[in-house]
Image (cartoon, rainbow, N blue to C red; front, side, top):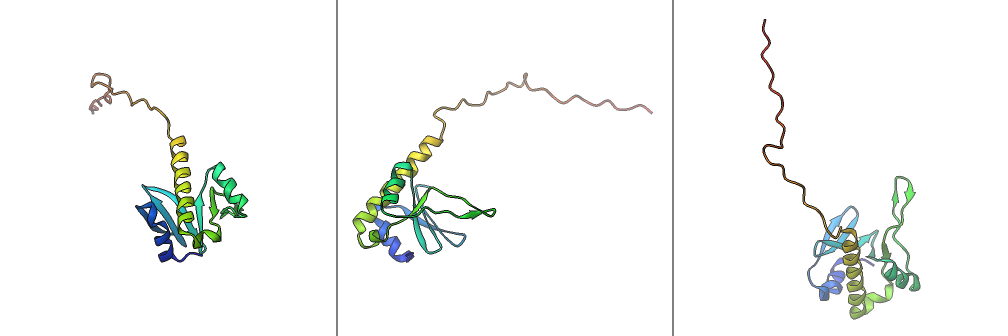
Length: 135
């Protein structure tokens, strides 16, 4: 079920959610992070391992696109049909998906990075000058 107008209404309580056309569907973004997608007219939420367990318990299936001829399971799970009829519970699951996306992004980022060392003009080597050939 991917009635985009209805989905805009369901995502409204989260605030700041946008839909971006991608390939044959949509990426659903908040704060610059894609936390949901629509593919082949089905809605999927991004999950971490703990949230994926809730989707498994609901009998949902994992989004597994085919890439280079091979199925490749992704961290997105199909939204249970029952959530479309309960806006409050839909919003709670969407918040959980966004939270999982935030956690995964935070885990990806290095905690501290050293800035690149700056060289003084004396440390920078100039290319050697060419001598004019005598003929």
